[in-house]
Amino acid sequence: MVKLNWNAVVPWALAVSAFASTCDAQERRGSAGPLSVVVDSLVVGQGKADLDGGGSFKAQRAFLRAGALYRFGGGVSAGLFVSGGRLDYDFNTPSPVFEDINDLSISVPIRFPAGENVSVFLAPSLRYDYERGASRSEGQTYGVFGGAAWKVSDSLTIGPALGAFTQVEDESLRFFPALLVDWDISDKWNLSTGTGLGATQGPGLTLSYATSDKLKFGISARYENIRFRLNDQGPAPNGVGQDRSLPVVFSVDYEPFPRSSISAFVGAEFNGQLRLEDSQGNRIETRDYDPAPLVGAAIRLAF
Image (cartoon, rainbow, N blue to C red; front, side, top):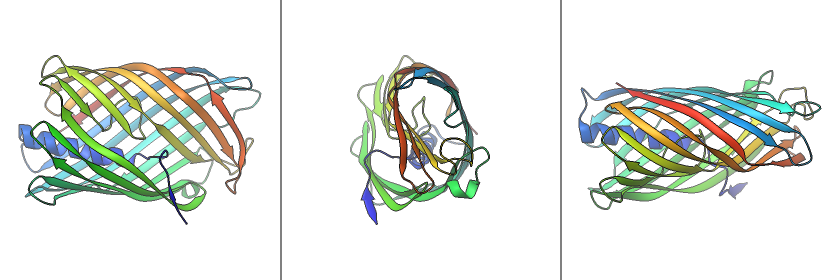
């Protein structure tokens, strides 16, 4: 069965955008060689969010990704990214809905030219999302994200993208459309999709203003949707949990060295919703939650 999904977009898009931005930075500024190693991490704290029907929760996220990129020449590049993270929930309810969620993923992004001003991106990926105590294999999903980007001018690159992926406890193949864009509106203003800040998943858009070559400010909005396998305890034994929201953050980004940056951000999560499903994927409960404050930091290093 095939479905079109406009909402559930996964981190595989991030591997493509991070990979593409690193390759582009190498081309603009030069590189010591064809091989580049990239390490980035993210720490986010979500403040108290009141749940519809009573109770509240907080959450913390830590995420680390490392990868290597190799430029073969002629616009052809390939890489390997491995990432791991933890999403910890703290519920103020009679019993916790779910607790520590593990996240592991491997992606192989590839870029190659398809004409003088067109680049094609592909990123097959394997991912595991599961609560501590649950079977890692039961939280497995996989798929591919790809797209094409046209260099319309020196200031604008744009193109369509499409992802196809599976979901935890859902054998249907899901498709989602996306848009790749990198637009230098002026010497200081830029509008782009990409990894952004304050999130590890989902499509997003960032508007940034560079005060200098090393310092810029931005505002980012991103749709997030994560599904994960639950353990055999709690209100949905061996079931599926889901957390979706729309984070909006203001950020400051400092680049002490080429292709490396340190960032801090503050904002809020909007339109949040938690969902519980049984082991067959049937809905048990859905609860909305109020806007919650977000604060965090990120670091990115490239060698």
